[in-house]
Length: 405
Image (cartoon, rainbow, N blue to C red):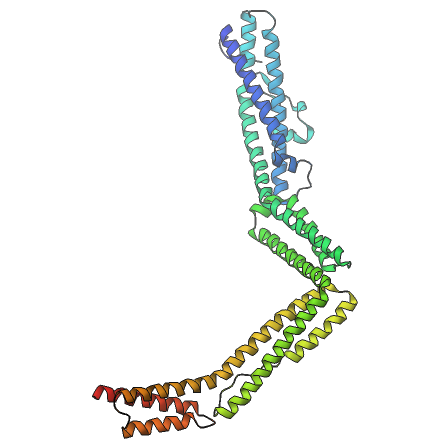
């Protein structure tokens, strides 16, 4: 071990020892903090893959180096403290030795002190380092390892809520399936996929959280699929508990559909009498098919397949609502033709009243136009196209008369 220049004074030695002790305490605290970090605990002993495994292997090697350098720092500091303790006030020999230990290349890095699996971290030959050099090397190794640990911890912070939420959904869905008293093969498949997805995320959180964004998208898609399955099971439980009431409500809804479709037919028949060459929409005719689907539900009930029954009943309820809405919209479109005729009749009479106010009630031309429009509107079947033209012609004639007057 070589010296490092002129010996320090006794006061300088005391100051240097206090500084080195403080550095040692800080290093000890930092290393303990590192190994108690949640990211470190997650990584330690885990079965890792991919990018996380690659970075952890490098970080783990860095941590091994940290402890090795820390131990070398400790041994040198302990030796310096032993020298200082030889006599109450150090003499020249002690000052020279302490100066060399505290500021010179006093830390011997022996190859045999390095764990076999980590010996590639240092040169093959032993070397001597100063305590400051040891600190710099520890700082470099600490920063790289801490960055990896923090990155994994941040990644898992992104992943954990997703994984935990998916597991909670699956667990509640499993209890629903048990309540139904029947196996749910689809839920079993989703549970197996969840385990595989969870294990993959835990083994390589860096790839899942900060790598290809499609990984997170796949996880979110799976969570949505699992939530949909739970929703279906919830429906199945509700339907099982209130099957009779649900069927009765659905049957009543189909009665409404049937009445609404019959009303469309009646409106069509009336329009065919009242309106000439009407353009009619297609007549709705779904009530019979929907009733057949309702009858088929009892077969599923007998088989105890409540999840399939829930899906089909929900679809049937939606179809019944859509059929009722379609029938009512069609009825409105059909009866709208008669409403259009009645509207034209009202407009014609309003224009006639206007002609009277203008003092043109006896006007021959206006009288002719009025009678023509009136005959078209009060003749069955009514030609709406010609009636519309006739009413518009009568209106224009009144307006022109008013302007001329």
